[in-house]
Length: 252
Ligand SMILES: [Zn+2]
Image (cartoon, rainbow, N blue to C red; front, top):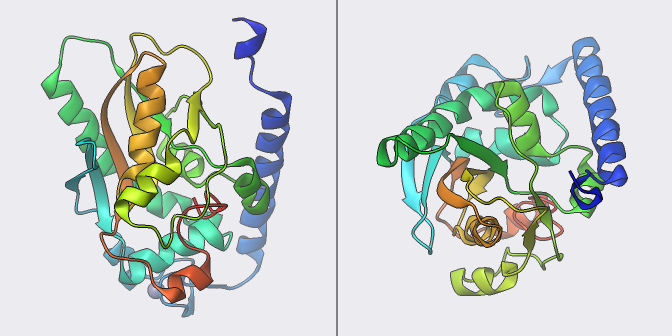
């Protein structure tokens, strides 16, 4: 490994910082009564009714660049509130429940990749990265927590090359233009097959940009998986809640 391939010291410190905050928040949640993240009733972190709404119903949607994305849930109603609480309101205690929702979609993506090309290398899982600003604000990377809770190893081979402006009010084409060049691979990925994972699929522009960066480093992107999918436009209420992309790669 050359010096340029060593994980950056700042990244290591940020990771430890995030892990410490996670541990403290989990301990706090054990001591204090919590509201259900899906319906706000004082209950467990997730009441039985909301847990039922998180049962995966894996389906597929294609990105503008025709990459198949396997998603677990429609991003609406209680599932949406749970995901937002997890991403933007520090409810890291929901990682395990969300990982249970996500896993069937990920397994479907892996199955599809294996059946289309069974003889070649195993696949590596790569999460769409957060910006440094988003990581500092949140203290954790949502998909990294989901993957850890699911017991899935992933390769940290993408980083944010340039910050992008908020995606929230942009059309599909504007989103694609906005994120172009947003990511870069940290080293050569020649000969590797990759499945990209992210929390929510909207237009697919972000996943397409991740795929572009991964392909540019020599890997073959064979699929993608997300927890949620929403084809709809985001509303003013979503914007107020800090949902979407941008700094945001913050809410990303
Ligand atoms: Zn509930």
